[in-house]
Image (cartoon, rainbow, N blue to C red; front, top):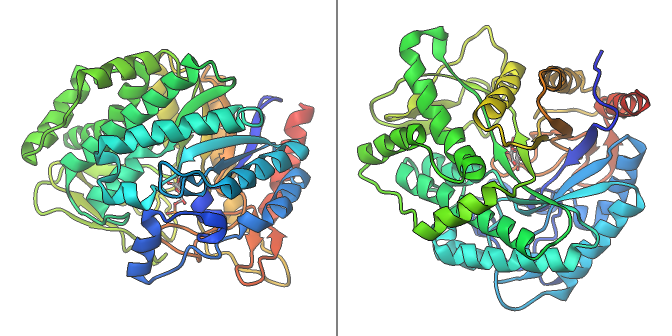
Length: 467
Ligand code: BG6
């Protein structure tokens, strides 16, 4: 039995590029992924879940199945096809219609401004490594606040800066497909933190109404086999993947214990991090004004030190046991056979979610409030006799909601949970066979089938509201 507060938000999460399809329709400009996916030739972002046309169906289903809020992102190049300059009125009209439909169904939109889909020309000029991307992002955000502010009151600046930075420059499964360049990844994270801070500061200075936050992927790191000698590796990973960015958004500067680890990594990799005095002014100001943290959580990691040639293999096929992660000077992930993992080698460990929230509360007492903005199970769902009996997803979500319930009892301000994902969709690095949705999508016909988890979700959402 789960017992969550009556006002707890039951949300469904999506991202423009993963659901909308219609990647060239109505004047949309190109993004980095269009080119990258074409070059790879593994899968296409069209039709995805055709949310560009099917959103009324998904929102009607959301209402029926107890979804109170939806996380959507705005595709930057539907608004500004080149990232800056010329405006695309059809794109603006689309988002007005989408938000109106949300509100008509009583569903609150939580809107992300950047979810991995950088405009192509900004990407080709250095993406987040180029400060011009920050300026373009601030202008685009300002436009969105002014244009959509009457419909949208919950804003998210950037989705998962670490996934972008590491995907682009360390794992190499995001464009521009570079591997093991840690200094570039650290710089890209810092620049995104500055972009986030500038947007938060602008939002508050211009007195736009509503709340603004950021979404971080936050995974807990533990010493493998609980061995003391592995503690240092767990700390290094935590600082690099979590603490560096949490310091930026909550402290407004990088604390000494954080910079100690970051500088070590930079030294080992002959790299440097450029932080301008102005950056620190922006970070400090934004840290006092951020309204909430969006926490994305799927898995945790057990690590030991690793010194040698880096080798990372991303499991993008769902063939269990194929993921490898060894990063020189950072650590190696070890899988404990006693701890379950998904077919994509994602370690299922709800305690990691609880521990992460506790760590945030303890290290950053000014953290305000947390929404879990993504959590869910990627699986190879099948339709059998017209039904999708996804009990494993129900089990996964239930144990993570239990961890949230425990966090709330420990005095942590957790206000809502957005399941990843609302409907089945396109996955950046796994294509179409890794399904997360409450609603099954037949990608040929675009028909939706509410899964068993949708019915379970509806009952839970409704009984929670009754108290
Ligand atoms: C999150 C992203 O990191 O994980 C989503 O914000 C993504 O965009 C989700 O789809 C699940 O990842 P994957 O690789 O299973 O699609």
